[in-house]
Image (cartoon, rainbow, N blue to C red; front, side, top):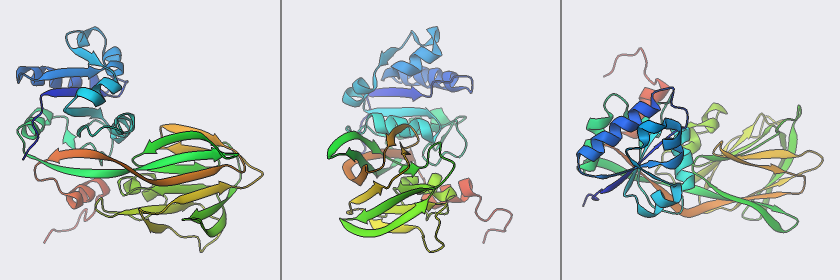
Length: 296
């Protein structure tokens, strides 16, 4: 049975020069015209300015507690940020793409009213994407903790040379590696940074976490896909410090001896797609598969 949506929140990236403000306000007017409760996320409303004063504003916490649906206007990064901010709640997310590729934000700007209307009428494809739970341990104490929908990336930061770290899976030593870093990615993130680093594409239905080395100083160091039940630990080796990124948004500066621990979070993000959505059709479009070839 399709879920009924009464309170709808609109979330946009803060820069409004690309048409975000216009799209947010247009959708807000459309939703109000349907007799629905409309909230504009507080930071988004501030960026829009006085034109948003006609609508109720809400913080991420208020949206997470009360909204039936969050419509994200922007690119994949905007949706990732919203997912992380509301990770502890099961608010369904819909993305209107104003970015470049848009693997997650799949409503088109020009057709957003119609496609959103179909979703509100119960004609949509729903799926759940799992998140990573990551923490940094220093001297036995947790100094950082967050969630990631796409990936956790250990890299060399401002260093002009490689770093060294030890990899353990479920407590078992795997290897010590010298490289520019490591990407730990979910299926959702497998089409992001990990793909650029020659990592595997993981279908969202796969219960796996991929480890993708960045410029390893070993020809045999290849990407590995692990069950999502594994506990992954990366122990930073001296003498260099590193930077650890989470979905390209949050970060933590790591020191030699720190232990990065990553497991699958029990929390999931629920995405709603337009009716007829196809993962492989999306890949063909975004990655230009079969471009220039006749279709049989």
